[in-house]
Length: 117
Length: 116
Image (cartoon, rainbow over all chains, first blue to last red; front, top):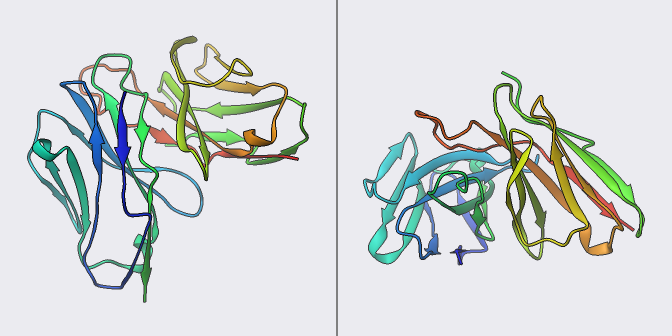
């Protein structure tokens, strides 16, 4: 069975602070996908990143960066110089790699990030 | 490019009734997945359809069903509604796993169902 744990239920920061959202996962699959999604108050889940299990390179996209460490089963997400518009619920998710099943995502419970001006 | 469209956005039903939710995927997307989001259980996978066939199914009772039409539009149905079915139902579409596909799921804004 697959499991995703986001231990931080809520985080509150002041604008321009850096913030890291933690994600720990469990799976018996040797290959899998990891995702991060953002859910603003409108409800729509916005895709942020997908990472293959065999690609452990860290990735940076603007103010966003992701640290994937297979040895500790973690896929953490850092927002640098946070902004009020970053306020949302962030979900980490895991899916099998095998063809046809990669759309069955297992989500963590989410982390509510509030960025105060 | 139009996104994933879900209708209705909000609806209220009473226990025992049934409900049908609709999802129009992004043009060209052939896979449609459904997820239920509740405060207690979080986001849970319901089922996924590809080319009118159910490819994957989550752990939900038979009261939850779905289908996909030849134009890739999908509907899900919940019969004999229970209070616990109150949730945000999210639909996501994606390309098939062809070469070059990112495997990215594009979500709609959801249908918020309240069961009284």
